[in-house]
Length: 231
Figure 1 (cartoon, rainbow, N blue to C red):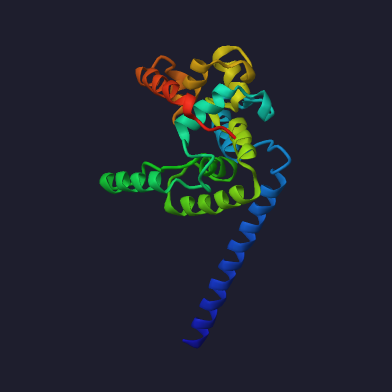
Figure 2: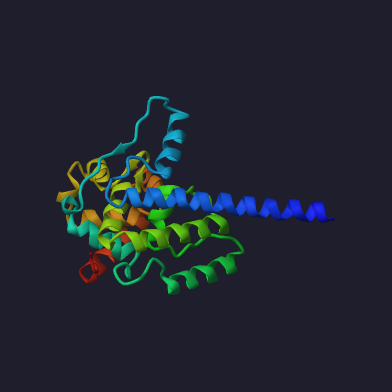
């Protein structure tokens, strides 16, 4: 029994060591991307692999643009739609998370997430779309890294450049050109609100651009945009 206990202790220590190494590896990337723009995220890698199953030569549509070349309307729309308390919280909307937890308990599964922009960015940069409590825990750790090492402006800049906006479409510039044949800088209020409404289910809305639900969401977001605090 002593031998078994000793091996068990070393196994636990080994797993803990691997966990800490993994967190350090993530921290290094977070530090690097605080000043260098990410070329490709984990989400992008996953989507590209899926697309290439049908079209081996497919490429993602993406083009990085700096913060100042993204329409103020889109910034307001995204904050209004995804995270109204973005500039004030430290990475987590506890009230929103409580509501999401109550929804999950009623449904008996992990459905609603109550994620902030910072949490969504953490997931997009490093994790997978799979819903699990382990992934949410890892997401929380990365979110703390982002909130403590990046400014709110940098978090929003990277978020707007890497999130999915359609089938193989990533970032504000690619989305503006894909849907409106314009640049991210030239997006008007209604266009911005519509793009923000697409964020929770971008590939569906890419295929169903006139979905009634998207029109209703666009109207709601438009009504909230004037009160959005933007970093």
